[in-house]
Image 1 (cartoon, rainbow, N blue to C red):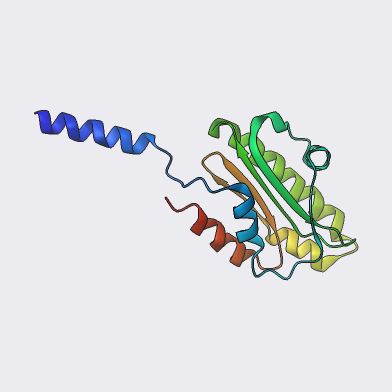
Image 2 (image 1 turned 90 degrees about the horizontal axis):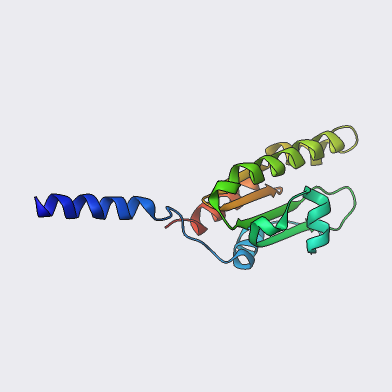
Length: 150
């Protein structure tokens, strides 16, 4: 009986822990952008992030946003490490709305960029929420999955 109780306690402890690793936000940004053919990526300031996403940065322990400084280019990667994973669905909805709005903005005049946005993704890994809009989305998705393997 003691062994059964110990096994149940161990199982509860294991499943209550985060199922994802928690990489450094800056290092993760480098990984996601590695090997990408990006145009003049610029790190966004906190003020710019607030304007771009209309997001409450007090909910984030850390964040990094890099976007193309070249006009007419939709490349952007946004990473938010939230204080709580309970805030992740709301943050993901904000990033998804941003992606949809940008798609509609680019659709009429830059179809290639609109396609890039359409192929972009919003990802959630525990308390991390990530927006990826890059030419090689698959490579960035693989890098994200690798970074979050526990």
